[in-house]
Image 1 (tube, rainbow, N blue to C red):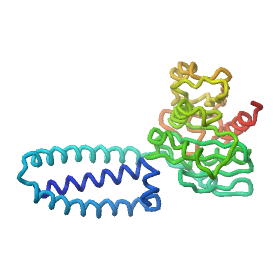
Image 2: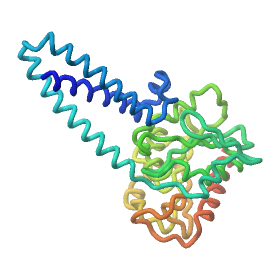
Image 3: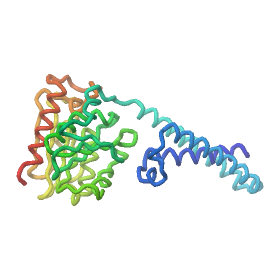
Image 4: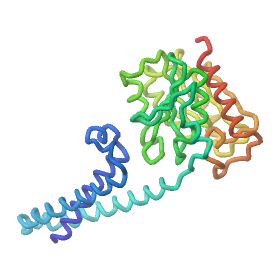
Length: 311
């Protein structure tokens, strides 16, 4: 039972550290973990688990005669093992993702028009504009930097863009990250806009529905809102490609009722689902008849017109 107790506490510590690593940027920053590499964090978990194992043996030594302890330890251990298996399965799931291409790497470099800066929540594309900013949520299981070409273009057109890194590359786990950026005293934009692709767009829409007082509008790329966004002061632009086979058009149409009355829609002729980013073809998607560069160019132009239009 000493070994059982040691393993139990070891697993608990690993779960806590790993959860903090994937889920809570605020906790990571407070503990200093945001400056620790993945490899060193794993080493910390192993060392911490070793200390926990030793503590578990000492605890067992004093409480071994209590029957409740004999029952609870194996039960908790089973629960922890199941949690660990789930965590490993999730890690394997998110480790298989779409990687950014070479054009994305180029767009992550600063030039005369746009300064590319690494920030705590991701990357800032700081262009010549000072009044408007966009917070971008990436699509599911897509490397964040794949959207750098599009955001670099938008920033050069006068709208600063914040590219948000999501836990496990799933915006579902970081829906409220935009609030940290908007509340940051280092930024003083007149208007904040949310934007997202696919799942990232859906989560950006949810954030807007819950925080309409913080944002001016929403730009959806191959996505749709499932919550009510109707408001006289809230703006919405929806963009998708005519060859998109990933976007569920039935759900898209059914959720039009959640759009503001003056919402705008733009369909890119020949564009598809993956064309908004630089990560290659996507499973189940249609074949685009235009280049990704052309699709992103049209998207950036529509973003500029939407944001700069007289309100």
